[in-house]
Amino acid sequence: MSNPPLIGSRISLISKKEIRYEGILYDINTSEATVALQSVRSFGTEDRQGVQYVPPSDVVYPFIKFRGSDINDLHVHDKQEGTPAGAPAPAPIAAPPPPMQQQRAAPAPP
Image (cartoon, rainbow, N blue to C red; front, top):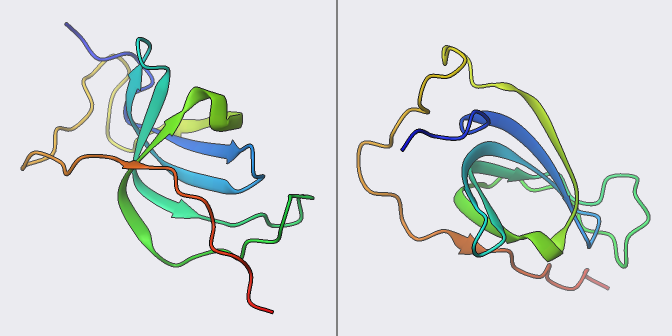
């Protein structure tokens, strides 16, 4: 079975909490209604009006799995550099760790 054409593309995703995440599309699971990204950064709520302000983070998460019901918006930026259209996405050398579930942001400091 071949990979869907968007696997390996750079994705921006905005959660229902108005937090923007950016990473490489790793998996789309239609039966579980999930989207998994790899090499993910959180840009926080930026200027969006969310429930509470969440600052950006310099941490790069290896994998995050998002439930479809937690996604407010999703934008495909481009195909990963060096991956021709229709080619499979690069496979990791070792099996990836289990994807992290999207976690709720910690309360903002007082």
